[in-house]
Image (cartoon, rainbow, N blue to C red):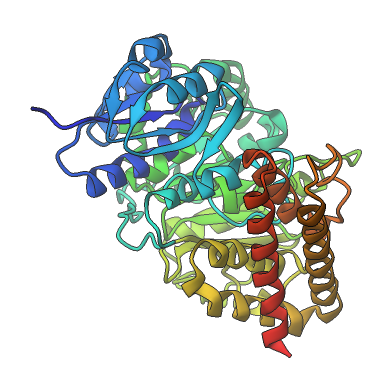
Length: 475
């Protein structure tokens, strides 16, 4: 008798599907001998199948039939109704993700619940999307045995420019790309313009403005052919977009221009050894800008990007590692991706003379990451204490407000438990200050997920007590 398959439901865009590839590998590691089945959009998986880990792909129309099967494990990474209905109906030894149960939507898995609670509330999140797909598979939060591609240039002198992104705010305009390409060409590099059908017009305009008509491949290649071109590059300069994740997966060196409503710690290149350029602003990573202009986008200039790209292509001794003394371009910060002792994605500032934090944001993100890791895996208490100590040393008043907020929420949850409150108001998590909103949103969704049962309230009190204990141990 054949082994029960492993099912993954990923009905999002191309980049999301590519970020799922490490999960497919991880599933094969944990359930050897079990086939992996993936539900995804055909327009993406048809071209990506030769590049993906071994799996059988199905279109979304097969969800009703797949729901009648039995699986060793089933993971839903999609917010689509057909995916949650499928997870609810199928039989599996392990279910992870959102399921449409008769009583309402229920999310299986600590980390998938955490990820779901990030909707419109991911300020201060430090987990990469691809890592969040993996963490529920083991009782300990360690991803050290997950393999990641290490970037290596092809030695051709070719620099790919991925022109498009899902939103105009996330990418440079035609004039920017043209000036960048001209600067690269003048320095001896060979620019290549890459994009799909949506970038045909943009590619033509960049080619016209730069005078590099032969560099334009936008709309001329299938996704599989784009992958072949990517593997001939020494560097891929790209906004946060699906082809960036493809380059990253293939081990192509990436310089991610992280501009507009994106957060590189969540959706930037995930392999270690890649490069990220961001505006040197405290609000970077907001996902939703309310200002009249995108100042984070205006911080980028073609000359500054060209200087960094050429240094990387030429393997300049100015950038040997994340610990180098590189002088960053004015208004910009250069980062290197890595993996910490747990195997989790990191984003470290590259310029040695610029390591002082612009704001409390990086330290607060680090603390929240460690706090949720500690709640999942109590053996990581020391990590949470160390991150809290870093925050207290640099921003003592902020850390004090954080501790006071935990104590207040703990008292509130204890009171709700005592009087058996039926539910929290819909405005609960939004009413909390931004400092606490990440946890408040997770707490709110956790209690909803537990149907506000006494055991759910008790778990909330226990978790808040544990977090308060971190502050007590620091005194």
